Length: 262
Image (cartoon, rainbow, N blue to C red; front, side, top):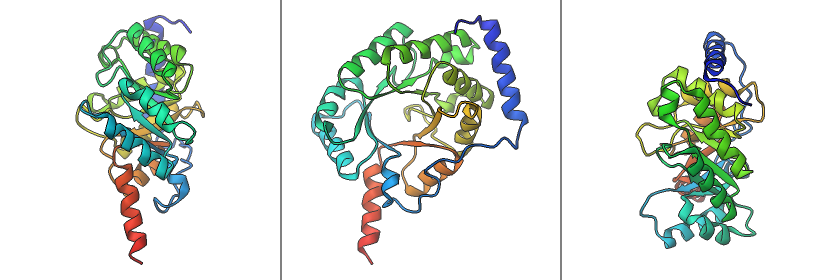
């Protein structure tokens, strides 16, 4: 799809008006919203077990993988330099490898992001989490926002989650970014990197879910500041289908401790 920016502005304004005007808009229920405890096997399938700190060592990355295998998390989410190690460590485990792209600023060129995504996939990544071009979004350059996401989607050939970095955005911009990402072929829209302050909120997850509800295959990932099972449930009830957290093991260990006390 090749549209002028003027056409994108028209489409975005219409989507913003639609989402904000319809308070009764029905949002599909998350498949995880009825989970009662972390010990429910379904819970782990919603967790992207994450380690994105710049000082992460090879030993810490191995530990991340071993924890994910133990608890059967959906994926391990890491920086590009760690993808090959993670892919090899997880081989045959059923846990996927997820790589972040254009992280954490989203300010690289589309060509650089596309190359990074292709490289990650060649090294074993099954999913890509990319950061949107935040400056272009806030400037209303929706044509660039779209082409930037589409370049990564095309290069990856695997599910792409688009990080909006909601801490910087108005509600209108969150709707715009979610809509454009869905149109560009994203599998998920995601709240935050966790590197710029703020964090996932139920209100943002619900707004993003409403914004992509017209495309049933597009989901929402809540990430940043999610450190408890109760916070996960709050995100699920608001429409999240995936959780990005570095606290997955702590959540599971806490549940095990409670179960062991009876």
